[in-house]
Amino acid sequence: MFMIVFISRPPNRVELRVRKKSDVWPGGSRAWDWRETGTDHYPGVQPADLEEILRKGVDMLVIGRGMSEALQVPPSTVEYVKKQGVDVKVLQTEKAVKEYNNLAGQGAKVGGVFHSTC
Image (cartoon, rainbow, N blue to C red; front, top):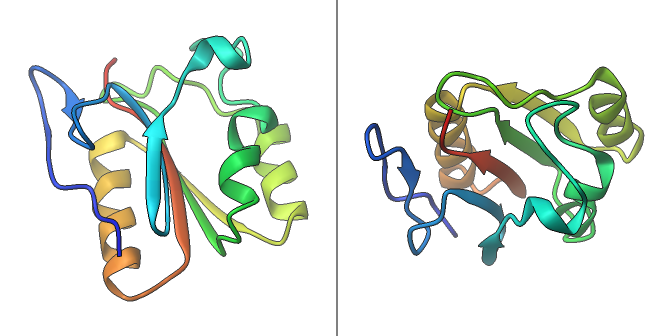
């Protein structure tokens, strides 16, 4: 089970080997590099940002929008995830981390993307 061990404000970070933006899934994680897909706060999280995690076979995806919820998550992205047969929760990052850890602790096949600043 992979759990998020620390999040704080300031210096606003999710500590998965100290990354500001992270992708996590059962058994692994990596930095979430927005440059790969051209992501920015607006228009926000795109389906391409989630492809790797969805391919890991998760049943639930948790999206952390940042400490002040500056990162947008378009309805079209949420619908895309649901069409893949995956439940999705979009939350402020501190709440998203708690939800992710709760689900992972229950043995759920959960993945997440977490923006830990703004």
